[in-house]
Length: 398
View 1 (cartoon, rainbow, N blue to C red):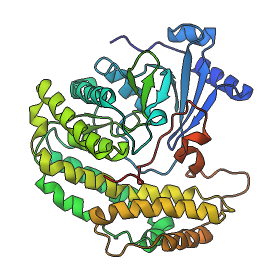
View 2: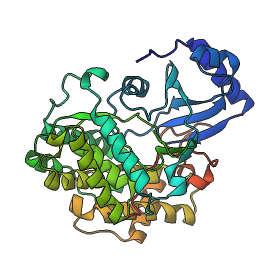
View 3: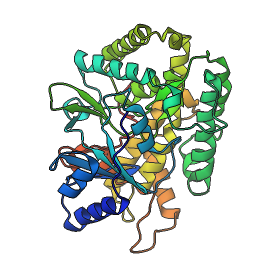
């Protein structure tokens, strides 16, 4: 695969600062990154090896609450997988925490087909093909794995790793500020214990590259006649492919018929590419991964809803946050074995109590953990071609 063009770091930073000063381009806000889509200038286009006037996307990492494991640098993943996954836009340059990507000209699938609506057979087939392409990426092509990463085929160790992260890095790491809120919401103190224990029952499956965030806002319908592009690779992992399928099924919010169809297409794609061993134990193990995805999402949903409340939150803001968290709790009641589900009013009161007790951010400073809820949760609050990092779709039944 051709190496990434060598764009001087100073040029990349200068061009980004120029666009920010002029306030041109389209800003797309997500949970973990801020994106700016611009027409590339002649110097930057020449340095990046593209035509002048093509659009690019500056992508800058934000400090935020850590709710998902990150294994690699996103740009390194994109550069590694493009030889195997043609649906990935090129990374043109990197400088520090900012990268420049080729812009996928099109619109998120969510604009045409919001969660809970049909996507259609052609899209289902293309998604299955994307999973097939992912299955072909060898570990040797990927960035180096941590020394303590679960060994290939250790599905039980992989799920335990995910559950440990949710417990230690998301739950326990945030108990000082959010512990009372978690307790008031009825989230069990050791919610992840069920998955740590049940992981022992998982069948061994060969590992592969996982996107882990393949949903309607990260699937771009291209304007060239029906192709799909896959964006946002920042939380890609290497592990059990059933985890990737499970996160996809939960976050896509399929209608039941299309959910079953996608599962069938996924099976067929794995068999067609000679990966039938990835289907081992699928009937039992997929449900466990689905339960884990729904269960662990309660933490980020509660954190983000609370942090999105402005200092002068009114009744409408509390009602919106309470509805979001209550949906997450309702879905997670069985996976987390929540003994008593609080009412939506009780959730609102818990959020009010947390908000009243937390330390206020000093005037003139931005809370790095605060997500802009209106922008993230409602695509209509952003420009028409917005790409956002969506939370778990808690409003769509499985």
